[in-house]
Length: 353
Image (tube, rainbow, N blue to C red; front, side, top):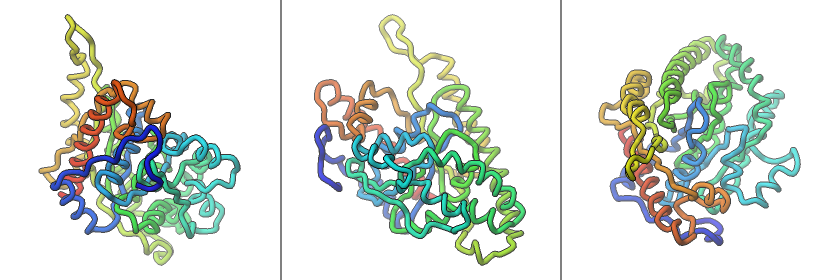
């Protein structure tokens, strides 16, 4: 683990199972795999899941992982960088960030030659940090999308900027995108560039609508990009693009709503009804992104871990490696079990594809 262990950080994670490591070898044999974590609904624990699962893959599975913070809120960046490094990163507008990747393209200078990658020792992965100015490029990508659908070179090059980024980061095993909660132009460009996606969700009625929205949007975007590629006015400018069959790796659910009745903790029935509907909703709305019948889309359920999550954010350390004692000992053990299980199911589904 780069940089050694810091105060407040537990020993490295135990290795994953032999089956998971075998799945990992299958995945690595195919080259870099780009995956995004996406839900157009906010407040579903997406950033926490990305940071901790990426750490599980990097440290527990000894993989080379690059995380891209493509959310203008920059919550992931603030989570994984220590306070001093975070403040230093944003002292001036010259900071190397995801904005550095997009800005040259937006002013007609073409794709960025090098990526602004930095190492995050505590989490074991590398990162392209976020930037609030990324939101300013949403209109650019939206305008150029109209040009892309008609085969315009500028529109296609702008739309495929994350495809170019992935091509430039082929030395990694995984490239993981953290995204904002929207169906906007930035997220569209990412979803049209990656190999697969994971949906973090809470157990509520809006998660059902999110699944429907994602399925509908992806179908339309893919069809429109295919038309644009067929009409491309200068195919040589985009010959690096290889159409990918976007796949759903699965979904991760957050803790159910619970209540205490006669001293026993019980799941609120209304939310249990929604939980039971999720597999059917995923199958109906996202079936075209599930290629194998043996895939189990539900990757796991992240239950409430008390104060461990905010403490890990304060310490800028994965939940599975917070070294505090007392109640944190059992919480850390539970977190390790949760993320090990999710990581193994994640790898198992990818290997089957």
